[in-house]
Image 1 (cartoon, rainbow, N blue to C red):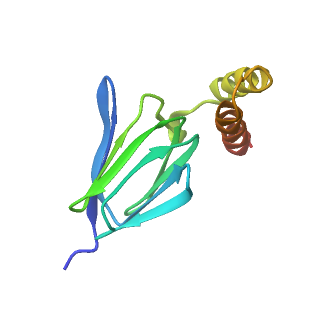
Image 2 (tube, rainbow, N blue to C red):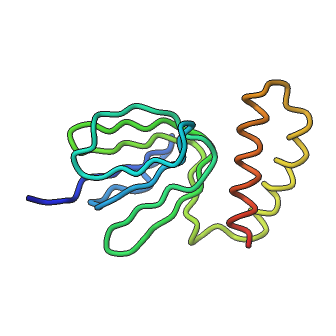
Length: 128
């Protein structure tokens, strides 16, 4: 019996990734969540953070928002803000970080400030 399942990341204009994997770690509002083969069915929302896909190697993607659905050993991630960390240059990271820090104080709700703080934390982590 295989310990793998299918993960698919889709943005509005393309399928970013579709492959077999052993484990995926997602940044959800409930916290970091690990998904393995035969995980219980799940629907949740992404917060800003890093998606880690562990197969033969490890792939990492930056996301700001999205939805996740897991059922029948298929993980579907829908997001409009996915970026492969391997191709994410420092100038883009710094630009996003500056915008996020400037917007933090102007956010009107606690939820908006919560999301902005995770965005800033993640961007600082990957810029190091």
